[in-house]
Structure formats: C-alpha cells, structure tokens
Image 1: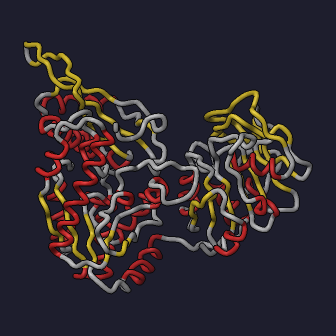
Image 2: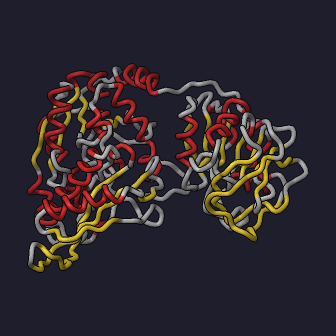
Image 3: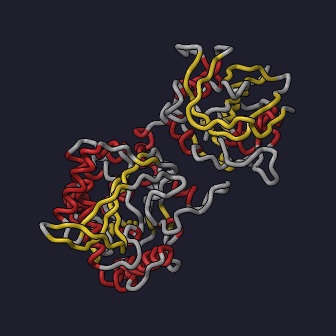
Length: 510
C-alpha cells in the first residue's frame, strides 16, 4: 500500500466508512487489523495511519490495543473516538467513563485553527459524537484544538509530532466539514499524493488478468458484483471465460432474462443457464430455521456448481465477485469483526474443486464496483441494482419456503422496486424489498371480510451495508406501494413498513 492510508480496525461501525471517505479523496486506503505493527506499516510504505473507533473501553480488560511503537511519531497518526482515547492513554493521559455521554449531533468550538481545521469557514461546527468514555486528563504534550459542551478535549494535537486525535467522527456525513478534516490530515499532515482511481484500477486489473493462463469459470447471479466480475474478466481473457447462471427458484423477478440479455447478448459473454429450481425447493421443503435454510442453499449451490464444472471443464480458475466488506465480514481478515455472512460465497466454496481462486473486486466497495461497471459498459439496470442476498428469497420468506410465499415475496418486491424507479428515488436508497411470513390478518376485499397475508416492506439507506438506517420515504410513495401490492398480489390483504435500522436489526429479515 505505498503512499496509502492504513485504517486500523478496532471494531467501530464506521471503520469501512473511513476508508471510503479517504478513497474518495483519490488516495488508496485499506482496513488492517488493530494490532498491525509499526514494522509492517513501514514495510507497506503507508503515508499515514488512522485509528478507528470501537465499542470497547480502553481501560477494559481484553480491550484491543495498538502496537505501542506507532505512537512514537514516525508515521502521521489520526485517532478517532476509541483510537483517540488510545492515543491519550499511550501518552500518559487519563480516559474514564464520561459523566455525560454524547450520542448524535453535537456542536464543537475550534479553539486553535490550522492543521486539521485549516480552511474551516466558521469557529464552530456540528459534528457526530458516539461515545461513552472520554479523556478526563490529557498529557502536557498535547494541545487542545477543539471543545464541546461535554468534551473539553474534543480534538487535540501532540506537540512536536504529526499526531492528532478527535472525539467525534469526521467520516460521518452528519459532521459538517468532516471530509475537509480528513483531507487536511491526508494531504496536509501526511503529505499523501493522489494514487487511486477506478480508471486506474480498471487498467491495472485488465493488465494483470490477461496473465491468466487457463479457462475461467464464473458464477453470475444478475447482481452488480458478479456482472462486473464477468465483464471485467471477459475484457481480459475473452473466450476463455465461461459464466454459469444457476436458477435456484429463489431469485428476483426477471433475473434470468436480465443476465441472458445484458451479459449474453449485449456484452457477448458466454453464459450457460442451469435450471436447478426443483432441487433447491425440494431441499428446503419443511425447513423454517433461517440458518438451516442458508446452509441448504449454500450446499445445493455448491453441488450444482460442481456438477457443471465437471461436465464442462476442465477449468483452471474460479472467479467470484467478492468485495472488500465481504472479505472482512466473512472472517478472512483478523480483527474484532465477527463472521456475519455465513452464506457468502467466500465461505462456501465446493471443497472438491481444484481451481485457483480469482477475486478481481476484492479491494473494492460497492459504489466503486458500480462505477467500474459503468466504465465496462454495463447498463444502469445492472449497475444500479440493489444488493440481493446469496440465499435469495429463502431469507425473505419467514418460516417454511413455499411456492405461495415465494410468489408473494417475488411479486411484492418487484412492485416496490418499480414504484421507487417511477418516483425517481430507487438509486437514492441502498436496498428495497418486501418480505412475508406466516402471519394471517383480516382484511376487507370488496364488501366481504377476507383473511390473507401481511407483507412487510423494507427500505434502507446505507453507504456500505455495515450500518443502515430505515428510509424516511415519502408517505405518498408508501401509499402507492401498499395499494399496488394489495391490488395486484393475490393473497395479500395488508402491508406494513419496517422502521428498524442496523444495528440492532440486520438489513435482511433473516
């Protein structure tokens, strides 16, 4: 990572967001384990280091620590929230549970301009706070740069060193001028040069992938990740790429047709279709537990994929649309993060396949993948598609997966997406869909009382799916969605709207 910014991960919900904000400045940034050593950072050639926030207390037993050597001042450092508290403690200050916790928006007053606050238009600004602990005494080597009503040391600088700490979160959009603060650190403090762009990534990726010396097999689903993977590999290796689309019977409406049209006919990618829907639905019959459903879908997909690979092979390489957050969430990076996506392809490869793994998107975030897709010529109907879970509609059907509930879920979700597109708000939200369970409610259809299912609509806003907030969508849009679902989807008599955010909920219902 020569010239890039390393973000050390202490388990904070905004750690990935820090990386994304820095990349948007044109400088490469990657999330590394919290205990990455100074020597490792030195060998990587980083221009600076950011210590992320985290849920632990720096004085707690077993709390994640940083290598003490990074506080010596050799590499520029920015501590955010928990990372800032680590800095204070490392230099001899005190951190304790705050008398007044700060969550949400808070006004900060700048007491010393320049450095991080260079170019600010005002002496005060609104920032985003999220902390229980705070420094109660800073060492004499630190200078106060900003303060808030509850945090007298809201921002500090270590005298004689390029080390800064902030109690608030500059990476969050609620912080006024937060991107400018990060920019001041990246360019003004670290002296980093712009070294990152999707155009550059495309050039280097194609150049690197052309060195593949065998046939490549890639599973495509209709989602943006696998579609971009296929388009990128097609440009690099041409007809040595074969894509397989496995129809699980758990897909969105029109998924198969979209893949055959965009990848097959418009881009000229070789796509083979395998209809395995009976196998998947048969394996799911009578199963209600969501984790069992995920495991069954993953195993059935691996089996179908392996059968295809052996029948049409040999293939020397297996390509996957793994993204950077997938690598972190699936447990392949060492840090405080848990294995969240138990169904994801990075954790469910067929064990008997002897192919080398190719993951050309594993350094990218979702919005970067969308940008790459546009550069590769994929249409908006693909690059702007909302994420879709690996287990498909099986995790949007609560309880047993039946044909009736699948139909309701598929048709209702299609209506949700159609209305949002017509209203011009589809691309402004992260994900939008409907899910259904076994709840039966009473309604009135015509002049008669009737009993039918209740569908729940979920629309969320997010940056990278690590956190998500329910969308405050206009009531008139929700009314259109509700009316269309109850009028057009047989068996549904009521529609509800989910107002749960992540955390504590997840984006998908299961």
